[in-house]
Length: 217
Image (cartoon, one colour):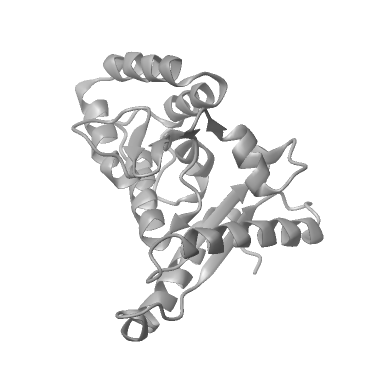
């Protein structure tokens, strides 16, 4: 399916959640039918053949995530083409080379549907509240997480976090658990069962594709 980029993620998530609900009674006690989805956000002139090939790579990643996780719900993987300007290898190789640093993961993707719903709720919260720090703030976090090591990135986050107003910090902290974070406040990295994960690059890249009433930044 080809749909406008701004609705592609929500459309796919709604379709996946609907599929899971339809087969809920079948899969409650055992691994029943589920759906894995791939979403590619790209410019209107991008060749369809390339989109198809990339979507197949993403679908493989989504299915792999399903096999090693909760088999009672589907999975979705997404790539934004502007983020893959030098992309010449597989998605998996690209992420291992670019989005994994010393064991720290800089992306949460692929998502389960439940994870993606929470992620979308978090980004919608951050987008729609004027008191929030705005898109540019998360862009800086994403770039620092990509370009520098763990210690520098953590120091940068703590400094930027301390500069926020109380209201802005409250918004960021409310979004933190929705992004999978634990602890009493937001941080650069969250420590999960698979090690350290940074959610902010995903927030930056998918900001414009989650939906909501306003851009805020």
